[in-house]
Structure formats: structure tokens, C-alpha cells
Amino acid sequence: MSSRLTYHREGDYMIPNLTAPEAESIGIWGRRRMEYLKKHHNGIYTGMLLSGKLNAHLAEIDRLAEEMFERLTCQMATEQGVTERLKAENQMAWVGAKNNIRKAVEEVILDELIYS
Image (tube, rainbow, N blue to C red; front, top):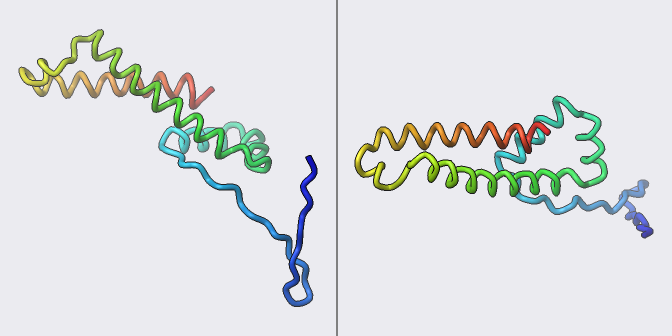
């Protein structure tokens, strides 16, 4: 695959006709992955950025993390009996249990997707 670079003249200068790749939507998990790569794996981050693969990678990590968050949150709530009935009977207990589940799921995602 050969891509030829084209130019246009501006005064005495030849300017390359460059276009940036279309950016994909990146959520919180993708941004966390980007910060991790920048801080701990700068070579990988720079290589992906220069090759144009970084945004696709971050969008994929974000998508996978969102799916994992939904799946694990529902699974853990079912296992722990955190139901709508509990919410109706004891809202404070329900909120506390849901917050604990969210934090536990966040730790799993950080360990398995973001920091790997």
C-alpha cells in the first residue's frame, strides 16, 4: 500500500496536505488507559500515537470496560442480594451495597484492562 503525499503552495512554501484521522469517542476508561500508558509505558504510547492506532485502542478499551462494568455490577448485585426489594425496604443499605459493588468492579477493571 503506497500513499503519496500531496502538497499545495502558500507563497514561497510547499505545504503538505495533511488530514487528522477521525477521532473516536473516548470515555473515562479510555482516558485512564491513556494516562497509564503515558506515565508507565511512554514508548508504547508514543508508538501508538505516531502510528495512528492510539484512539482506536483507547476506544476499544473504553468499550470493553463499559461492558465489563455492566456485566460484573449486575452479577455481583444478584449474588449479594442487592435487589429493588432491598431498595424499597432499606434504601441506605441498598446505596451502601451498590457503592461497594461499584468500587469492587472498578478495581477489577483497573487491574485487568487499564493497568495491564
